[in-house]
Length: 187
Image (cartoon, rainbow, N blue to C red; front, top):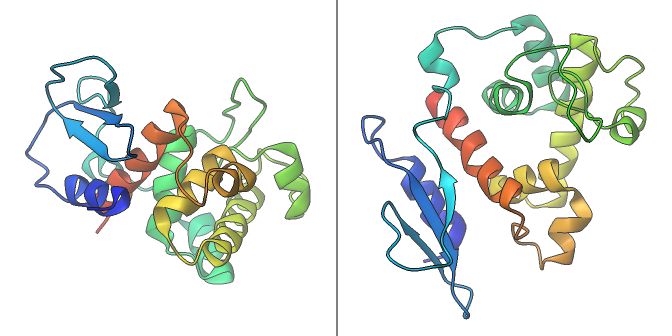
């Protein structure tokens, strides 16, 4: 079974199931997932003890007007935009990452310039820029959501360099299922 399909299957499991998920790729590239790793080489992919509850479980969607406008202008599902915001900034419009990403959708300076965002802390501008970037990534990666999210996190070139697969970066391998989990929770 291909990695994205397997991850999607895991993420679509009933919400009541709570278990940490560990992952390891073997020499042949096969992804192995478990809740109890029995040998070396497994990396924690999803930590249910520290993960924040999915956005829908918290009961509020913030910045609904900004998200609705960006969704309409870009054609990107508002639920996906909200899921990215939840993981990127936890809905904090003033968030800044150690790498210099800023705002709700954690735009890097070059990405902000690319999409005409003058103030990365302005929710309307930030969400619009992030949504337009997601739209372009959807086109570039044939609407393969796992690759779109990997590119949003690690960069387009990283996904291309790794054969149009999720790059083997721990952060990105955690990021993709987290966003998909929030996205699924909004259905």
